[in-house]
Amino acid sequence: MECIPRLGLGLSVDVYSPDLFELMDRFLSQKRRPAYLEIFRATATALQPVRLHFPAIPLAYHGEGLWITQPDFTAHAFVEKELDDVASQLAILKSPWLNHECATKQMAGYSFGTYLPPLYTAESARVVADNITSVQERMDRGSRSGEAFGPLFLLEMPPLTYFMAGTMSVPQYFRLVTDLVPCGLVLDIGHLWTVYRYTAARRQSSLEQFVRQFLDEFPMERVIEVHVAGLAQHEAAVPRRSPDADLEWIDAHAAPIQSVSWTMLEQVLDHPRLVNLRGVALEVDTKPIDCILEEFHEASLRFAPMIRRRLANGSTSIDSVPKRAEPCPEELVSEVHRQRLQADYARYAQIVSGQRSATGPEWQEVAGDPAGLDRYIHDYMPHEILYWGGAITEMFPETCRVISEQGVSLEEFVPWWFQIARPVERPYDFFLLKIDRMLEFVAERAPAVFKQAEREADSLRTAYADANDVARPIMEPTR
Ligand SMILES: [Fe+2]
Image (tube, rainbow, N blue to C red):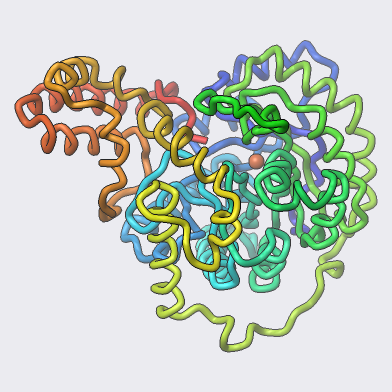
């Protein structure tokens, strides 16, 4: 942590959306510019020119696809290669950290399009800490010559998308993780809002009280970076006729930053244990450039002095981090722990895909107030399978036309997707997964159309590979 420079107010961006070079070009004419850029995982071919074009701007890395919440994370054969890839991208950017969400898009053989939070249980926290230890060891081995450590692993508190399952609070969970592994944390303001909105907290206290209590329990001394992004209602979520219908927001990077987020940021920056902060980033991937410039200007005016003070007054050593004894034997993660948690995650995937009811201690709160889970199962998740990261009807236009003529509805594709767990044999890629699943679906439900589907799949795969080979892929960002 001592090696991480004090950065200031920056942006968390995607190389492609909006085009990073165009965005930075627009900042050239501005008085206030980002102090650093945190860049979402891309290809090495796409990241190299970024480092070359902006030699004076510190670049940090937002990882993706390392499903450290999952008990089988280290069991996959391809993970070593994935970690090599991450290490080389960190080196290209000269990033001081590897930020990754404490979330997954795949669990127990079931695949999703967007992040699902961990089970908030002690067993799950121990597995996360153990997996982070493995990743950090790998990053340290790959550190540049002359440096003892690789980039520091930062664990980001993930958003809730309408529900949360677990037996402990979010701050208790992160306290347990940080007690077990010397990682840093990213505190995301929008994600924090969703924790208030989609837990019992919103019925028990005001937002201001909730944030105060949350921060007091959260390991704030480990927070290295703070994120601020937009919140919005999801396009597939038809508003409910209830008094708080307008507040059914979820994390939405393309949407404007809500005023409530600025207020919460103020509360966070004011917290006495925020002593190791290194940067605050507005997350602006997929946002229109004009809106980014406007919001950055607003944030600079309002928060830059406060952030500067925070960085200047911060601790210069890790003495502020409470020391803890070696983990006791029951805290060590065994194969039995991993297998038990694997079964819990299989149940998690089946519950949130609507295949089984929400039972068990982690699901008690959800079962008592199922509106959020219902929203996820009936609106959000079908939209994800049919439209997110590539609309099936646009990817397979001919196939969809013919199968519909044969009376096969695309609606059936959603439950079919989650019917069985499938072995995970390659790194996560939702676009390629959609192609594979659609082919299997057609083979089973409309075999006469399979040849047609295969032709469409082949051209999609070729175009996708070509696009990823050059510096400008066509795919949507995967966050
Ligand atoms: Fe974030």
